[in-house]
Length: 414
Length: 83
Image 1 (cartoon, chains in turn orange, cyan):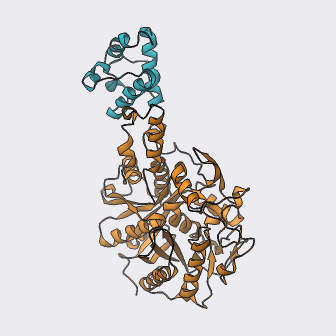
Image 2: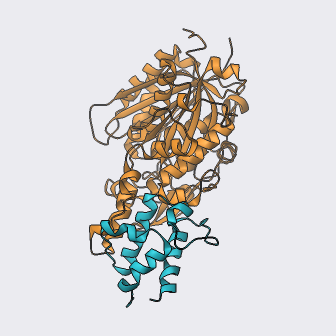
Image 3: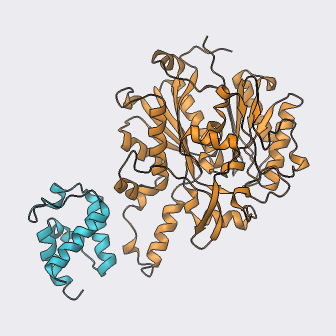
């Protein structure tokens, strides 16, 4: 099922801000070295908790005043989008801004800004005269994508995809669809999370019994481990440049990989609890769309967040989908925590270099494997050297039962 | 507050909005927005900051009084005489 080059969609640039890394090279080096990006955050009302925080040059692409006016998500987004374009070799005169779309996945938006503003007016006896006029433009759902278009002068469409923690993958899928429809010629798509600024998100996971705790923050995010006790909340962002293959080849672009297939579905079951059988169906749907068999997948990058049931459900779904086919499995959250709307795309970026270095980055903090999470090809502690990486299957699931799977294959020209 | 102190407060608020603002050649009698990189949202930031610092409620129909540095000082001087 080979599509014509005008319908084949490839990744040609990556820009990211992850806990502990502000470029793909730095990110990959940390992952292969097993170096955690998680630290701690002392947050209003919450005290000190493990968290993944990003450090990058915030004024590389826009002024401090614009960062003050905008949002943290916008700041991360502008950085990632500019880095992706630079990585793709797309200077300001090299692409049609009217034919460029910006599609960003968000788990939520506006929570941080609203909490900050309620705190602000609490200092003025809750007099709403002190509520900022910046509140609405900061909290509209298209804010981070819109900040990118203003920064880059992009006049094509921009909007957010709300899909809980499946949002990054969902935005990538949106980009693929819009390119195939011919709506745009270049898609900047990915996901952003600023949720470390929200005490409410920490408090809600804590109330749910799903907020990770560990005396050493670098060991707090431990999917598949017997001692796992919840999620490490992280901020971050990742934006890809997606292009149709014919255009990418015509301009001599480097190609990280080709989006071979994707799937999205819904559990239709529970507000928070994941459902393995539907995740299995989602992986099968992505494989079917890719025209691939489980045997053709080299690496599965898991969604597992370090919650008791979530990790087990996903492992069961993988077993059911892949059976006895040998496949390598890893988890990026063990290094950087859960970057929510950015998780799917950051975790895909974490694995893209496998096509060229033929290494599977390890899962870390796996001291005592939970037997219910035992998967044959789980890569733990050290990277695994392979002869070749053919395809990566990237899982990303979210609350309200939203599942997304993206398969990226090694690029081979016809 | 003296007129000079009020002027310094206004410039300090603008500098807090835009740290790159250049005041060296500022014409105190000409509109601030024509000389500095300020838009309507920045202007509302100035109004909000005056409210926060001095509990000043500036009615919307009096916003034009804040157009230039001199008109700002003229308008604020009686309101901030005890500040």
